[in-house]
Image (tube, rainbow, N blue to C red; front, side, top):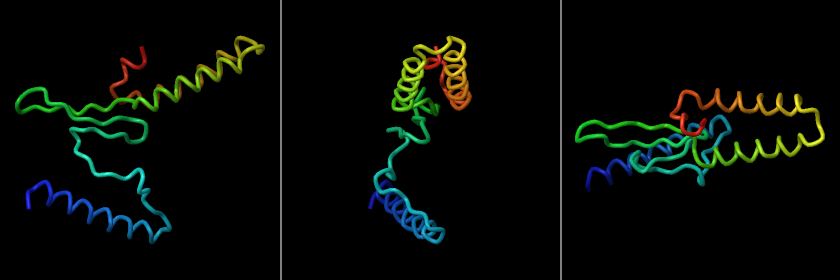
Length: 118
């Protein structure tokens, strides 16, 4: 058995144990959302995409940035706020937009978000 197969088997056993532990509290893991993947392939978690890049032979860089789905959802909400603002006072629409943007930016500030924010 290769090392990767051994690690995958251990991870699957860990998921089974975690599922049993969560069941004690009445919780379950979502079979659709739970998957085992290598960090080089990247994965989405809590609205972010986590991915590892190799910068040289030895050095690696972990990149955490807003996921494409999260960005699309943000744009959709901004569009809806803008459309709902038709006929309302301008300051009210601006206040609603600013409130949403401020919350979104504060959530994603710790991550690699400069490109998305611009």
